[in-house]
Length: 178
Image (cartoon, rainbow, N blue to C red; front, side, top):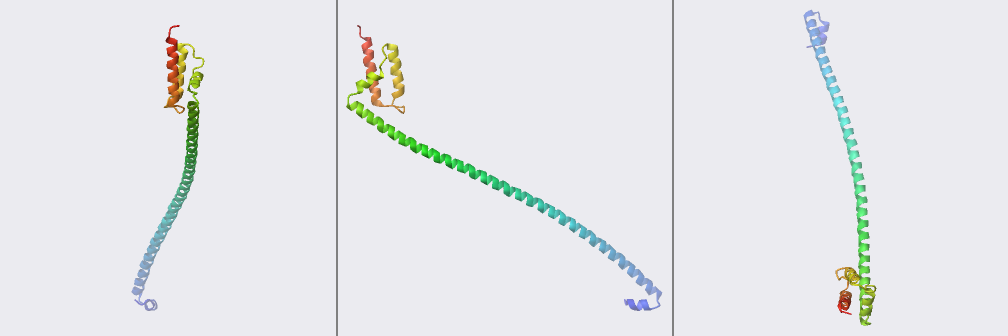
């Protein structure tokens, strides 16, 4: 269709057809323009919604990173406290072992001195000093056994034997008629 020939020509029928064609084309273009505008508006809304969701996710991610960082820092502090506690326990254990060794050495030295010098009887006299009647003698005997029993920290077999001998001797002495 040659539009210029129709416009310059005298054919009214062709002119009406051209007008009708242009009207229909104008309506079609307006409909496409409206559809295109609706699609553009929809795309803008979706983009805004996408940005909002992305901002929300970024905010959540930043908060989660901060929370993880705080938890990691808290965990590190707890680990340092535990490490310090273990170091202190090891130091106390070493000190206890040294004290136990020193005590054992002193105990052995005291035992050797008291046994080699014949101080077993003197020790028994000191331990049972003031136990003059049967009740106080038995009480003193029980108290001494609680202190020097071999299962205790300060326990010693030889001292318990000395205590037993002295208790038996004093008990027999009380039972003899006067």
